[in-house]
Image (cartoon, rainbow, N blue to C red):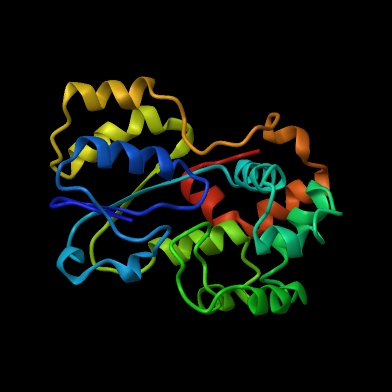
Length: 229
């Protein structure tokens, strides 16, 4: 979470937030980082009336990015280890387990026992009490995170698409009255992506059944932001 005098930026997991955080902290003198992946409900009172900015990505792409990033780590997080059975399961089986956390999966109980009881300001930074409400929602994990991050508050949330970040970030900032200098514009246009994972085109990872399960579980994001497979 980044707060400034004019707006708040919320960092949705694996959705371009690291790039935006680095940009804001580099070029805006009043930008202040508060925690990591924190939701709107934890915006400080003095910033609660400010507009909120964020980004989202194609859900099918999100699951590929998450899986590839964790698989490549020497020590994957608890979420990956439980859903993949310590790396024994491949992409389709692991992501299917992820999509079923809100649909009666016994793995949810295993995961809740493994997660910390409070915010740690590292990694996904999702304590057990924050994930527990996914139970019986039948929401995809990414849609659950989206709701958890952006819900609440009385001011509008402007959510851009990761796929258009270089085109949308500057207009989003200007829409809330944030002046943008030439150096910042050049950074947004040309700086390399941050915190990325190495993988093929996301469509290559999906069979028909898993593709449709994402369409069902993450229908809210897909419809709201005009995504398709």
